[in-house]
Each structure stands twice: as C-alpha cells, then as structure tokens.
Length: 178
Length: 123
Image (cartoon, rainbow over the protein chains, first blue to last red):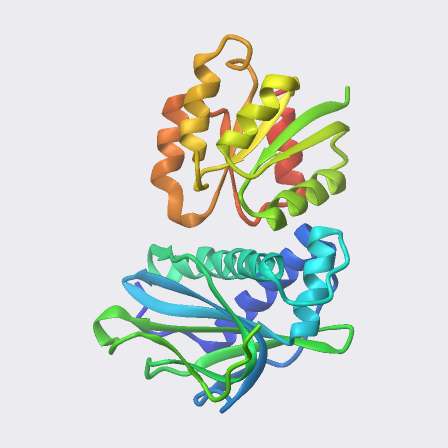
C-alpha cells in the first residue's frame, strides 16, 4: 500500500471522475482547468459547498463548491425543471453530485490507498462564510468551468496513522437567514 | 417492447438522473413511475403494473430491503426484477438484498452502457 500520493495522479483521477459524471450521467459539458495545490482555503465563500468524508487506512475529505447560480443551473439540468433559488432540491442535487464524483475518485484511489468507506455528504449554502477541514495536508484542487462559471472539486488524503483531528468546521462571518 | 418502470429513491435528483441515463441508453420506455420511499412504491404497485424496478436501499419510512421483502412475498410482484441502487457505503446491504431476491445492483455513478446491460440481462 502506498504511503505517498502523487498530486498529478490525484488531479488526473479527479478530472476524469468529474468529466465522466457530468458527461455520462448528467449530459452537461464541463471544461477542466489546471489543477493546483491549496494549503490555505479562502477566507470567505459565497455559494454552495459540500463535503464528504473518506476513511480507511487513509483518511480524507472530498469537496465540491460553486456559486449559488451555478448550483441552480446544474440542478435545473439534473432535475429537468427550472430552478432559480437554492432550495432543498438544489442541496439534494449537489449532495448527489458530490457523492458520485468523490465516490468515483475513491474507487480509483483504492488501488493505491486500500479500501475506504464514504460518508454521507453534507451540503452548505450561504454567503460570506469560511469552511475549513483541520487536517495538515494540502488539498488538490481541480477547477472546472461550465459556461464560464466555476466549480471546484477538491480532495485531501492522509495516512490514518499520521492524521491529526479531522473536522469540518463552518465559521460563518455573517449569517444569511432564509 | 417498451417497459413500464418504477424508480424508488428519496433523492429526486437521482430519480431524474436515472431517467436521463435510461434515455441515453436508448432503453425503450412506456411509463416511468417515481416513488420517494417503499411506502409510496407499494401504493403505486397496488394500482399499476411494472416490468422493472430500480430501488435505492437507504430511504425513510420504508427502505429498499423492506420493500424488497414485501415484493418477494406477493405473487403479483415476486417476478418483477428489482435492481438496487447503491453507494459505496452500502455494500453489506447489497449482499443482504441479493439474499432477499434482488436481481442485481447498480453502483453510482452508473453509465448508459451499465444500465443497458443490466436491463438486457434481466428482461
């Protein structure tokens, strides 16, 4: 079993998984940008972000984030009905999208990292909030574009015996009450 | 021959995605019924006849395993193929479903070819 992962391999797996889900299952075309490593996540975020956990000999997190407008647009495509505001069905659609993409990434990563389980996705929508996973390892970020709107797929893996506490904390700087 | 199909999943997104993939796979469909859980599925089946059922496993009110138990206990439903829709986290339940009489399973994400092969092998 591996004790390191090449970032290039991870980003290629993420790219392939995301394109497969969007194209084969959703009929939506997305264009991948250049992957990069993110050590410190953004201080604030507007839109929809989802997290899903992975656990086995390696532990990690997968995340998908995009603007509220893109989340509504993608959900409209999935559900074949016009959607203008982020509601329960948008959150459901984004959660399923996360499940499918990160699930597919997990399936490929298991060849190197051993079996991993997948948690249930958590989806958050809001404005001007910060989200942080308290691991020490950097995230691999692969940006995608759909009609000039950006969606980020991020993954982070670390060996379980090296992992510190893994939490997903949301520190809202301002609440949007809806 | 066009199929009458029942999709049982508490996620509206998955129900629609599955219909989209069925269309891409060029599976001939006459009617697609949707249910959000096992209770709704049984209510539909009391009124309508279907040729094939796709069912999620984890659902509120009545999950896929309990639904499967009901289906296999009734003469009018026991021969309808039931394919379970699963995520990675429910492999143990997939095995349980197989023991209860499920015809197979589909792991998300699934492709049009996987759908086509699954139906072709069971109809």
